[in-house]
Every structure is written in structure tokens, then in C-alpha cells.
Amino acid sequence: MFLNSLSMLTAGALLAGCGRAPALEIDDAWVRSAPPSATVQAGYFTLHNRAASDFTIVGAYSNAFGSVEMHETVTSDGVSRMRRIERLVVPGGGSLELAPGGRHLMLIDPQRPYAPGDRLEIVLELDGGANQAISFEVRPAAY
Ligand SMILES: [Cu+2]
Image (cartoon, rainbow, N blue to C red; front, side):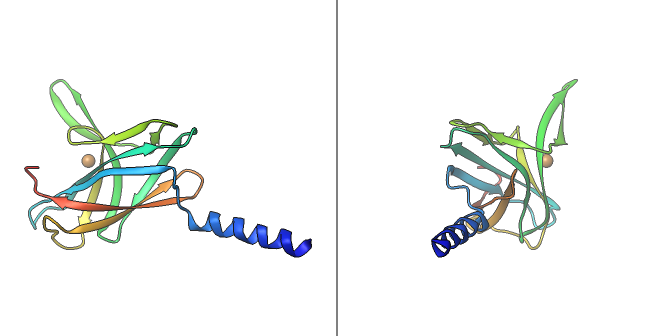
């Protein structure tokens, strides 16, 4: 009996340690290619949340970039500016879309130039400690 409870506990801990969020489905994850001199690039994706409760993204990181921030684009007095945001929510049963002209991942300090067709992994940090790794495809700037 004790042994059973212990194994169940271990299995539970392992699942939590995996840090996956299987209820999240990723669509169309891509990074806009940039000239070799560029110091920032932008990443976009759509996330579908198959769970009833919200997922909140509280950060992101990648080996391919010095740092990753979450940004939104706001227009005031006809001027567009980017602003850092601390959280992105994927509503339960709903979707979150990051797209050109709106919210995006700001990919700062590319470790080398990336060409269209390259694949880059970016990890999303979820509220509660789980991580979700996403594979992004580099696409031409004109895409
Ligand atoms: Cu930005």
C-alpha cells in the first residue's frame, strides 16, 4: 500500500517536472527573417487552448537569442510604438494570436544570422512553472 502511494506520488512529480502543457495547440509559429546587421527580430504564433481554464504566459527564452520579450504595438497620434507586456493570456477554450502589427515576441540579439527555412526553438514560460517549447520557422521578411 505504502509502495503504491509512493509510486503514484513519483509519477505525479515526474509529470509535473516534464512541464508540458498538452492542452495548448500551436499554429503557424514563425520568425520574420532580418538582415545580418539586425539586432532584433519578431516572432509570431497562434495558440489554441483546449482546456477550460486560462493559460498565462509570463516569459520566454531561447538559445537562439540573447533575450526574448513580449511586446504589443500601440498607435497614438498616428505613431506606432512597441510596448513591453508582462503577461499574455490564452483564454480557456479560446485562442491567442500574435501577428504583424500587433502583439509579438521581440527576439533580441540573434546569436547568428538566420535564413528563411531555419527552425528556431523558443520556450514559453507559463504561470505556475510549466514550460512550452515551440519550434518556429524563419520566413522571408516580405511574407
Ligand atoms: Cu517589439
